[in-house]
Length: 405
Image (cartoon, rainbow, N blue to C red):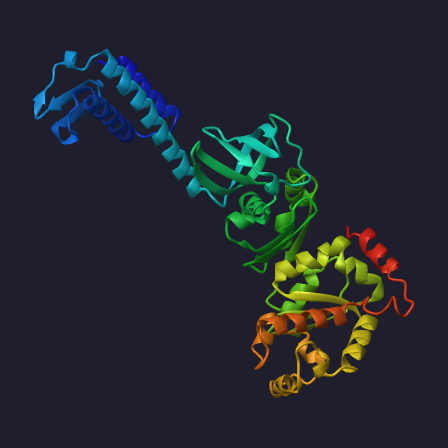
């Protein structure tokens, strides 16, 4: 009985996750490779058999069993080297298959060390990496610290299998809620969408399949216990839990929380929404560095413009003073085509996407981009204010300093 070989097989099966059949075939393949080299024979002339219970190996040449002495010490050493190589390859295959099936899920990993901005994480059987682009600014990677990571990708390299992890991906938050909130696990509450700026804020859209279950309350937990646990895992990142609605006006209004919204005007085809707020809610709705409106736009799938009524009136007045032919690349013929399509004024064109602009006869890609750029310029609340003596620095200052709770 080959006790040493049996011990090796038990180790790889128990600790490395390689199944018995794979091990047996790997060992037979290694012996066959070594025998070919030792005997200088073609593979089809050789056959290797192995007793799985005793690990005894028999080699046949042209159907005739070879005596054990034929396979000498050098050949045995070669077989051992090939065996180790093939077992390592088999182990990499197991790891690759295992983690490929888990891409898009969350795993708990321990910090090993950091090198040139890349963090190496202990995943048990192997290591993973968090590239600098996938890091969250809130994280502190101290050796031994355990944290949840999103499995982003699995790549085969010359050095083996590389597991790419992320701490900044928006689905990290989604997966954490989907595994830690029982109502989501049971399918009673569903995560509809998520928008995230890692380290700063996440907006999570949720919906209850039952009217008697509060989707927001389920995610928050008693005294905020569930959401606090996730916030702590994310280093204090703010999380807004938004109840989804099939009514886009209501969903947009909720997504822009905590700002109070006066009105929402929709352009359905272009999924554009003009959001009206009181002047004192303007900075709150936009958020610091525009983050609140940016995340609300991602969450709802609508292009959002936040305006006070005063700004809207000023922009409309500005656009109504101009003709279609005042736009770059729009001559009389194109202007007539626009009117035939129902676009009489610049305010009619403003909600359109680039794709919709290109759909107007006579408007190509380049012209559409110029028109879109000019319309956005005219719709900028600060447009022309400096020339009129209006101080815009206060507006910028307020927007930067005021951040929602």
